[in-house]
Length: 129
Image 1 (cartoon, rainbow, N blue to C red):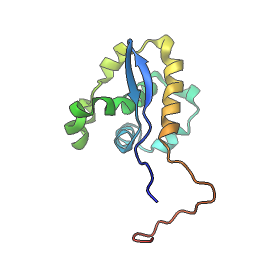
Image 2: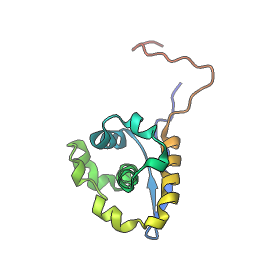
Image 3: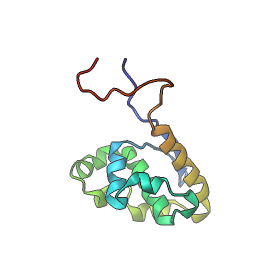
């Protein structure tokens, strides 16, 4: 059985421009670079997220929107060169919009998680059919 491995894209409007958030393995590598253990960070209550946390999560989700410009930087793990820049995001987000953006980020992260099939048992053996 084949599964759709394409993470879900969640629309977000920033500065009047419709973009999308997509959290894939590249996003996770970006977040691991800044936070170490991503799961520990994501287990934090969102009320304890700093503005910097929200901006990094937003940037991680937006990397795919700019994939053509970001491909070399992502491949070489030059995270500071990824578009949009932190400074650019700072200009695109108003503080008053952070609660809505945070909820959209959470929704996009949840949407990116693989679906769990009820009653399914994982098979981690390679070559098992």
